[in-house]
Length: 485
Image 1 (tube, helix red, strand yellow):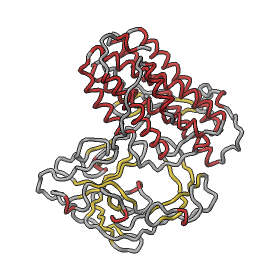
Image 2 (cartoon, one colour; image 1 turned 45 degrees about the horizontal axis):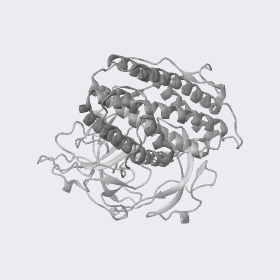
Image 3 (cartoon, rainbow, N blue to C red; image 1 turned 30 degrees about the vertical axis):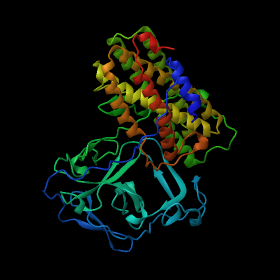
Image 4 (tube, helix red, strand yellow; image 1 turned 90 degrees about the vertical axis):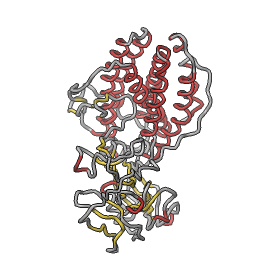
């Protein structure tokens, strides 16, 4: 992403001339989460040792309730069961083990990944680094044994840790937290406390654990809440419609226009699943902008903001059509949206609530969406997909600019909301720019890998969102008309 192209255009649209850069903030896991002052032992009883491939204890214990604790720092067998690469995988970044030198015990291995929210299954060949002890890991990390991380791991791997064993914790319990938030896995070790809401996934509807972006040190029940862009959020989840067999939503302009060889069957399934997910999110965004328009009206917004909000909703209809068109193209069967449930959808008009949602979903979410789509466009080699991405980039930049304009107007009305906006931005950036997403990509077909998406988001956070926050929150608008270009 070219910061020198995107940042000035945002600033010009906001009527601003420039602002300083900020260094990228640390979005890694928490370093706390240990001693709560309690002396009650929360170590599980009746647990069984998790064994390595050599049959020896790894220092991790599977507790009867399904949770996992670490009781000792052991030297482990780094062997894993991932097969060597065959050379026929859809995505390959290495050929032999000799290519894998960036970490300990590197092997060039074949595997497949499935991202339950965004992707289908794809075969891949890449370097796997399987640690054998904490010494193979960086500062603030420990070696997590394969089998101790559930479906989050396929081999021993280094993870963030605020404790190494139960001896570091006042409760004698150093637990393994594995949380899938809808975008990727968040895995870490932390002390259990008496204030914890849960101990195991069985105590919750979804996952029990800690999220690296949260400032809460207690283990809590967590939901899948990661979404880029302006989704229809209901009770902290992105609401979308199920797919349906229909052709009226699939734009013919997303048809098979390509100068490169077509994708293989596995790649086509991957791309169809990806664009179906994108389409469902874009379809839900139509309702999100409708709700936003009602909020603007309830708060007495100027006509320019209402007009732009209506235009953005129409853009999202077009985006959904284009994305359903690509899903139809790659899947070979017509697909569109089914009915969208509005159960639980409310229209909050409290100014602080509106600012929080605006900053998290739009100022941060949509600006990151622009950066991610721009990165996808830069790598894409398919003319049809590139045309769709180019249209989305242009439109989403206008949508993100609308969000920043709206924030300027709200702050002009009530400058005290600046603190609310800053807090919401910090929270959203920490959640949406964290790393650790292992999902592969097909960049030539417009789908960045998880690592590339994270890199684009982090660069946008440091070179777009932080400067824009400083410009908007640091400015002193006295009349609402200063917001508009």
